[in-house]
Image (cartoon, rainbow, N blue to C red):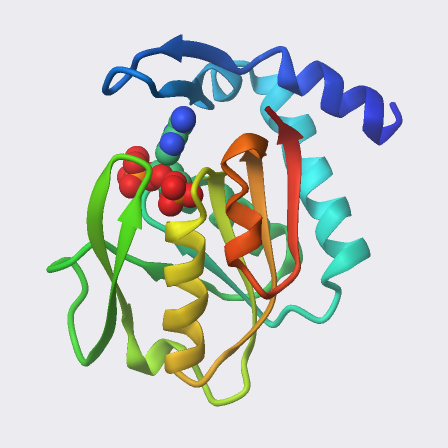
Length: 178
Ligand SMILES: O=P(O)(O)OC[C@H]1O[C@H](OP(=O)(O)OP(=O)(O)O)[C@H](O)[C@@H]1O
Ligand SMILES: Nc1ncnc2[nH]cnc12
């Protein structure tokens, strides 16, 4: 099946919840897609194809906690490159770099292990969803502060009207647009 058709079908597997978790937020639930094994497999194939086509020189996948871990780890296995986590505070051992950022609903802090990023490492940053762009921007900042280079970002879903990609100077690829 060609990519466009696959993407159209995948989008139909995303359930929508108005006013969750707070009034005014339209929540796009990717877990409804993951419940369907054939759809999850198709999503994996599309992620791999888009990455190989657009970010072929990625040397590691960095995933953002927590939903970014699900897709980032699948991609790292398929590409045969390391998976590196960026986590919420207090979860990672060892020497860390950290950054504080704004969410669509609230603020939070991210941490990465210094030893996980070698100087000049070309990174593919992965998350489930791009909303205001605060998380992805913080992720890029953290990778660069740690000595890495963001070769590109991949998100499964993008909420277009929030214009999150305007905050990101690195190339951003999204699969399903809302
Ligand atoms: O573009 P932004 O406005 O920054 O929003 C997108 C981020 O918000 C959600 O994460 P959340 O902090 O809810 O964490 P979770 O994945 O652990 O549920 C989502 O998984 C993205 O990481
Ligand atoms: N609207 C939304 N739907 C799902 N996850 C989100 N994370 C941030 N905003 C979101």
